[in-house]
Image (cartoon, rainbow over all chains, first blue to last red):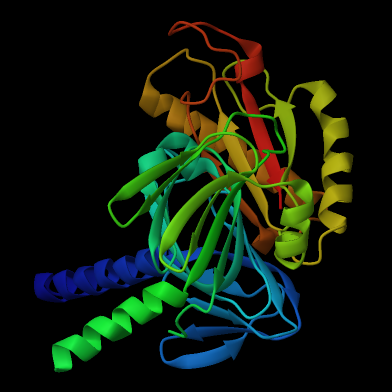
Length: 153
Length: 192
């Protein structure tokens, strides 16, 4: 095998490694509780989200009138959304060795409950929650948010 | 004209949006707080049940109650996942051999895993502060991996277990550098 072929394979491997790494970094958590109608909008598709479904950065989680969902994130943040809710995981990154990273989540409508995790403990300024009109900074916290008559999207 | 319509629309949307943010008592008793930025204003919620509500475009801060929280938030609070359960096993100095008294903990861990429908087991290794940050990162990962192997041997499915090393960053007992503190040579196992 020539040097060029080696280089090419090396590049391919590096590329594949990069892709695998990106995918791993993208998994934000997992659905731990799922009642009634719970759907996730992801990459243009709407998929059902029973217990065990991975949650990714960018996911838009929707619950129906009879629905509620509980999500455990990789940094041990706990989230739940009540009936008729839209919760978006805007972004999530967490390094389990250094506890560096950051996250942002938005409740568009409905109800959200949060128990903050290791990101908020290590670097409170790296964690943000949004409502249609407010930005919340977390200082090691459990809290609940209600958004009535919010926007659909 | 179009501008006016847009303005009216945005005012209308802001006007009919009702939002309420409530700081809840923290179950672990640690002090907690929220900073809420809304428009130009910033509000600090610093005591349990401190609440800020936005109704018809105006902000209202008050102290809520367990009854109001139950009334508004019972379904969402019921959907919160169970808190992670933590377990700890300790190591003999300098290596990845488990201290003998740690073995019994494995049975408790297996029982907890069995009670979850979709368990995740996060195994995090820690070291004392003897040695460099880098060697301790490696040693802590090695300890975590050896516990992972032991859990797999004990019948826990490999695909639900993740192992990480946190090195000397999170000592259980804070010490000066280079102190041989057995309680810091440990692996924490979180079942969630």
